[in-house]
Length: 119
Image (cartoon, rainbow, N blue to C red; front, top):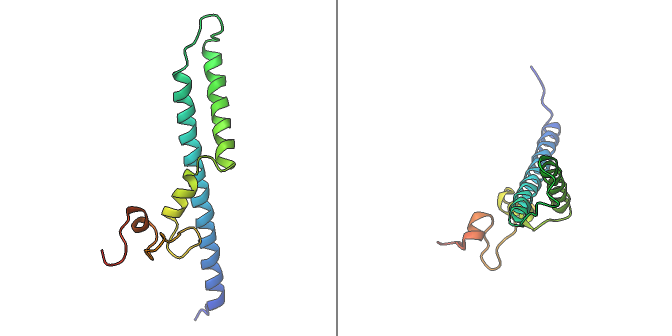
């Protein structure tokens, strides 16, 4: 018969939960970085290029890499706040990331959609 220590079980569960939260934080930060990258790319496409300074394919690759690094650094520094909103929405209820909507006593999707208790 195998003995399972309940304290070890609780520790493993807590470690798994914190790992899941870290994975979620990384995913929402990466999503925000990708969103910022697409926004920068679209903004660059709107700028008219002159034939005098246009560097061809090399310039396109360089600006793409530059936009990627800018978007990563912006996301690491807090970005547009999109990652925070996604964490609030996607974090399991009861964690620090899931905030109650003022006066409703609800968390997560119900807090965002405006549906409270009794709806």
